Picture (cartoon, rainbow, N blue to C red):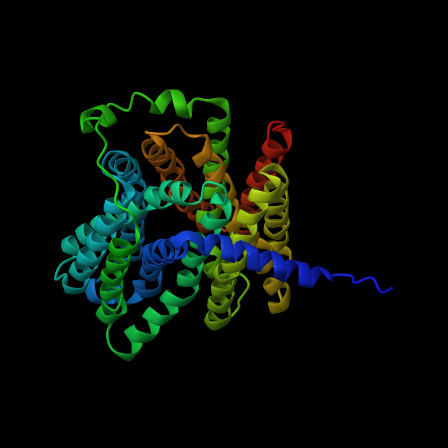
Length: 407
């Protein structure tokens, strides 16, 4: 009598098919695709700015400092828009906010294209950042309603869509800018945002506006007690540290490879694209790990792996080791998926969007300051030491997670 043995690969494929079937069941697949496509655009078009910065500098005669300020304005506006976005999501419903975000992003991006002065460029960029911020909170809270038992997996799929955009959209915009004009490098995304709005309108369920007056949400009575809860506070600290590490790494990795390691611009760009491309796999895997085994073990693996990569960066000089280190560093892309999924489930119903918006304002805003500090250290000839300092922060994260017995 023969005994059939199922190989790990076959079991993995079988499990993956079941997961996909469950995500797609009950009409939820179309909702997930619409939300994921909107996020694909929301994050990746923000990443177009660094790719087209040389063209913007030439058109508006921007100095490096002013060009850097433009990126800071974009990300600070995105951070500041998180709390209002969360409040409005609780009051008016996520569907309306997601659609409004896509329409506002399309409008402001069109204004960037036709801007005839530096002031208009900065204003449109700030409003674009604030508009995309409306998407940030609502996509998490609506997924919790749609996938109460698979929030981590659904969140991972959605965030992986953003990494597809980060890997594809900036190079595409750069190619279009060179072939035609930089305005088309932004402009081609405008109809895509409109398409996203239509998809969200037709797939997401309508929700009645909350009976509670908006003024009560604006009072923020529940925010401080919720965010002061030890578990939520710890999650916020972890996200702040992660954001500091991420913003420093993605802000300076290509420059470090070119200026310090003397790699070509093409190789550095490919490695940077590889980092985000790996997130296409990393985030769903991280989400599935959270759904299956919880928070602690996946976070320890993720940050330990990334920390080793950051420590090793100053000590290698050839291309292939950098490929390996880029792969290891890409584990960072799964961290937020797990922590945000866990925090979203812990936040109270009714004010979940408000609390999540406040939380995201804190960690995204503080993380946006790290490139300034990192750059100041690097400007003084301590580029290697700056990456080692970021590696130390990764070690701090590992210690916090390891000491968290309730994870």
